[in-house]
Length: 70
Image (cartoon, rainbow, N blue to C red; front, side):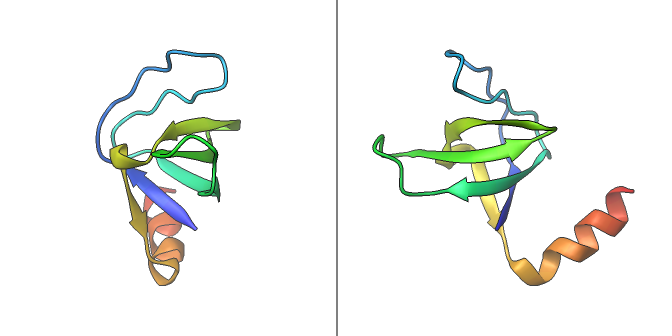
């Protein structure tokens, strides 16, 4: 599952991700102990991020996004 970043987020801890608007995140885990946080990967980095800063992308749309961004 993928998600698009809607709002910029600067990490406040080492286990968090810094997010830039329109980044595409691969969601790795939505069931974390801390409610409102997901684990994902962006730009080769893995960490947690606030789930309300992103919108999920339907799986069928992902290949189109990848081709468009290249």
